[in-house]
Image (cartoon, rainbow, N blue to C red; front, top):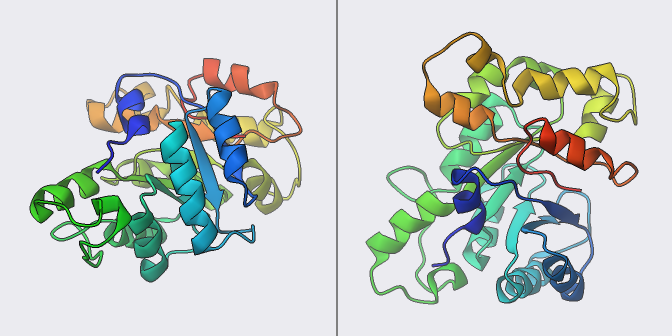
Length: 248
């Protein structure tokens, strides 16, 4: 199976950038890759994209050298299995909570780490891997699990989420967060959003309180943000502040 380039770049301490994808256009995926983006996120939460079109978008991403991720509407193990079978390299979960994240972590991985159903005749496995155990191990290792932090109560629970093994990156969803916080549409210069970024961004409480858990601190440093299309100039400042994976 394909190695996950996003996982490797983040492990090297690099910053990566990508975009949401709401259209059924493989050509736009190719344009994103040509522009130098590292990943794109196929949207199953709000867009009309279906599983058949997602397959074409994933193929376009693989051919163009840009990593395909996918945002699911909720934790549906059957849907998660189907999109992973296509070769999606990361699953983005809206309104992530302790419970939904734990459920997703089990859905994306094969035994012994999860409950994902097995079938060798899938695209991710090249329609028949020579060694199923090796493929199973690689699939469990390579997949990214990315909760969207979109509610004030979840921001307050970041210590617990950051300590959960298998959660690789945290996206802050600014619009849903602003609505839930009662200030719809504010941007990252608003105190509530700025505070949310600081709460679990680089130099977050785990580091400030002097904990020795290096793995937790590394995971916290992978806080990311969806940068509103209305304010793309915010991206450089957010990345300079420690965000490693902005998505517009």
